[in-house]
Amino acid sequence: MSNIVVIAEARGGALKRPSLEAVTAALGLAKQTGGKVIAVLCGSGLDAACAELGKSGANQIVAIDGASFANYSGDAWAKAIADQCKAHAATAVLMAHTAMGKDLLPRVSAQLDGSVLTDTVELAFAGGAFTAKKPVFAGKATMTAKATKLPFCATLRPNNFAPATGGSGAEVQKVAAPGGDLLAVVKEIIAAAGGKTPLQEAKVVVAGGRGLKEAQHFKLIEDLAAAFGPGVAAVGASRAVVDAGWRPHGEQVGQTGKVVSPPLYFAIGISGAIQHLAGMRTARTIVAINKDADAPIFKVADFGIVGDAFEVVPALTKAIQALVAGK
Amino acid sequence: MDIVVCIKRVPATDTAIKIAADGKSIDPTGVNFELNAYDEFALEQALRIKEQLNAGSVTVVTIGPKDSKKQLDDALARGADKAVLLSTTEWMFDGAQTAAALAAWIKTVPCNLVLCGRQAVDSDNNQMAGNLAARLGFACVTEVGKLTLENGVFTAERDIEGAREVVTSKTPAVISCNKGLNEPRYANLKGIMAAKKKPFVEQPAQLGARGVEIQALTLPAARAAGKILGNGADAVPALIAALREQKAL
Image (cartoon, rainbow over all chains, first blue to last red; front, side, top):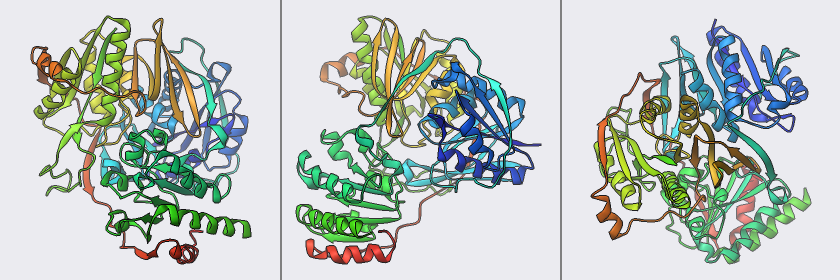
């Protein structure tokens, strides 16, 4: 028996979609190991999230529920989850590579003294061993590695597995959240102003660089992003403009920022430094607009327009507005 | 407060990665190495906390090749009090192994706070802080973009999907630092001269068993060459048509 535990994530009572993607990956592994998939989640008021997980195809759900777990506390949650991993003799522990996954899974792995790989994009179990692929050097290379110590603990890059929907009401086991001393605890969650689309979840990323010449000209980028309608596009930025203080670090795309993989990516006034390309080269379609026809960005772009952003972008914004209005 | 700052020597972010003949490592020919960018924020924050409290110590530590002395010397020149090189000839890509070795060493020194970068930009694991904290029994906050210390309690802010989380943490703690936390200082001549007299300790890293083994390192497939659709705003209709044809719009 070689069971797989998925650590699921609920925010405000609702299950996060990447958790269902992790269930898909776990079901794939369990088919090979011959074990069960057990989804474990923590919080307070988890019935709705459990109901959704119940339809995922996971064999069993363990909800560690209680007032002491109302707010995220990595130390307390990791201990409670590690206890469940031990109780279910898990040989692999999976979680989505979200802000919580990045924080929580490494601690669970340490509690279990297991091996760990994060941000994986492919998992397999063959010849008695777990293997995984993950991007390294911000995607400039891919590492394939084999776990030599169990349990194997991994986070999974979101939007890389289809969400699991193949089940009908798995058994839910309720476990009371333990009380006690919390070392670090979330006190408050402040929603981003204006309901901005998170950069890594956006269907379209409109990114600007030095070619815009001044911070205030990012209005052109914001207008183009807004033209796609609410909740569709997010604004990105090159390292140069973040370092210059034009844009917040949260918008930086590239090796010391975020790696994004949207269906559509616009690089505007971005020359295409190697560390920027690392962060966006897996976008499905890349459009580059740049004055310099020899800019490296044109080597990775599917479509390019050579020209001044101040002239091209407003025309493009109008065209997108017309298209969206006509739909 | 006795602060340990964990740093790593990594290939510069403008490096074009080439795979070595063994198919499992990078070809170091012509690669420039630098201090991992996120670790600069960790070091700066350590120096600021020491200045705020006007007490304590800042020790920088790395697990890595002997060449890492350059990055440790730079940290001393910026203001760290002591540097420790846990030497190894291996590339430290195995996060659990790294955390275990660091935890074993940290248990032998006075330490109330560990600061590190959110991730090393080579292995991109982003897992060291949590792994280390669990092994030490310390509190932990990761990917911190704002940090204040008052009466021995940290208040940290971190970005999560579509929101910002405010976390309070007791000490001892491990805190991983994100870009935007501070503006790192650079070494000046006085700092570089002072660094020569600061304690530097080198000892072999006590590495336990590996948790993961690299089977292959590969380069991603190159993207097919794209198409320049034209010049200026006149090319916009051609772009819209091309994107619609690809069902990108």
